[in-house]
Image 1 (spheres, rainbow, N blue to C red):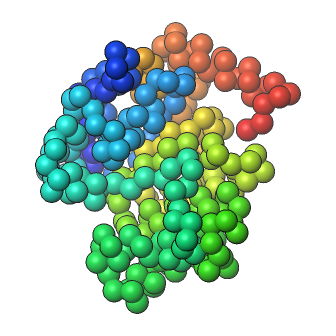
Image 2: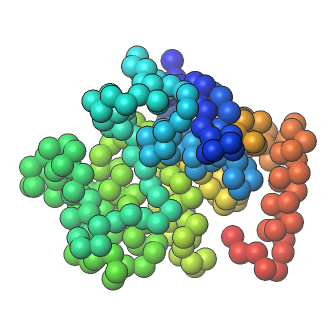
Length: 255
């Protein structure tokens, strides 16, 4: 049995169908990267799973419990959210709290840990992402890469079954991208289950177990990095990868 089973996920904005009956299974410990053209529903997929967007249809199953993604039941929605944590493009840290307090917040509010327990857990996670020397720095005094590493520590501290990462390097200056990618690689190597949306193809090749290619709201291709990059069966995927290769070879493109 898969750790996560997504069935019939559909979402539209007005008359624009962004996700069209997506089915996806994710095994425990897998790192699944979602790629595809802009506007094809990659970020929306993650946001629907965390109920930041409300889809028109769809269910998600964790273990033996199935949740409706269209439910308005607050208790059921809260239970679903406790299975996942999201790492956003823009970090979403509390500006009036230092790094340590940002990580402690969810532990005291959601997990109901004591301040002492929350502090110990937060310290542990911040050490893992190399931020032990910035515990008392506020977000405005941290680089973008450092803020994202704090955000990753905050998500991991809550021990989600599925970690959702939405373009975690897209808001960073090019020289800061690598430090966050190294952190994500470390997180993946520790057995965390991750659903990742990214445009960093070289990183996808190194860290992902599986790659999902979305086109017009549907899963067009699903395979290992070797299958996707070396033997793409879908014509649309072939065109997408050719365009990516052209960009990567361009003097104006930085990855």
